[in-house]
Image 1 (cartoon, rainbow, N blue to C red):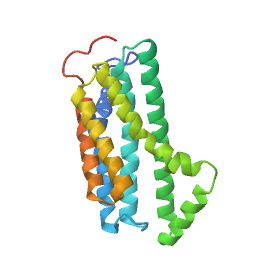
Image 2: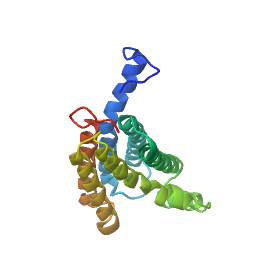
Image 3: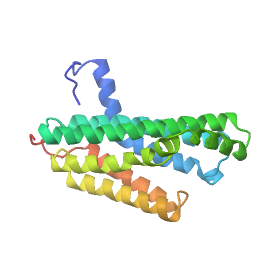
Image 4: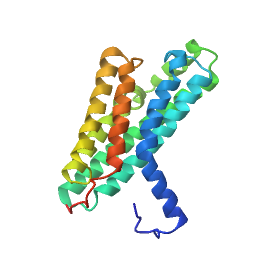
Length: 217
């Protein structure tokens, strides 16, 4: 995790390197932590400390997911031609989705701070989602693209032998379990937590790299 512009022994490099390493663990941990913090209010629209804490943790988690994606792009180097284009394209999609999730969480936090009850929060969301494109980009497709992009990026990294095939498989398993839970039994089911935990394990394995020196592309 050495920048070409920053000396390896500089305090700035050490901090950047530490955050990059931590993102593989802390990002998914915050993702699961936010879900757990929503349990006391049953995942409902209930302004107050649980809502605020959960969404603040999720916000931190997605910021760390952004750091993790950038670190995966760095780990993919050196690449040329089509490989480089694929890595950069998927990284771009992942970061776009991270921004969509960050926007959603900021809106959620503002709604929680400014609303007296769930009905008032729903009115805020209805107003925001009434703007053209917001529902699609911030709350549905745009927000969910992160998980697809992460799965694809993990697969590319495995093909390039920058990470193990096992790590890519575990990430894929986590994404699939999350998708089944969200689309099938609902976001408040325990299966969501299982998917998040599996994704956490996959990210942890990704952060460890291939275990052997990476091969040049």
